[in-house]
Image (spheres, one colour):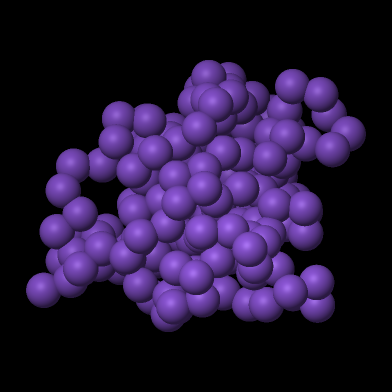
Length: 179
């Protein structure tokens, strides 16, 4: 948990240092929901009454899902700010990209949403270094087996709350100049 808090503070500092300006309202709402859900889940996990704690954790996850639903079902996000966490070329030649947000969540491509070599975004991605602060645009990838839901890739409930990773299709990435 300390790692996530440190990551969040480090990202906030980097974004501030990059003069990112005001974060879009949708990103603020998203990050506030993640942080509120994480705090409620952590409090519930610390409950010494395991039955009550388990019920409280489930309630925290349910509340987080309800809060995030209208944000996540947005058509496209524009102008969100984050830090490049990973850039890799897949065997298909497409680019895998992961961007960490200030709240510790990540937006990452999956095989079908990886950046195609013939797309305008590919050249930008190829020039990005891990750690670069970027302004991004794109959309969340629908869950392959749950209609009406987006694809969140955590294996555990705890991961879903503490460090969620959403499948994302990038339509734009641009580095933000730092001082």
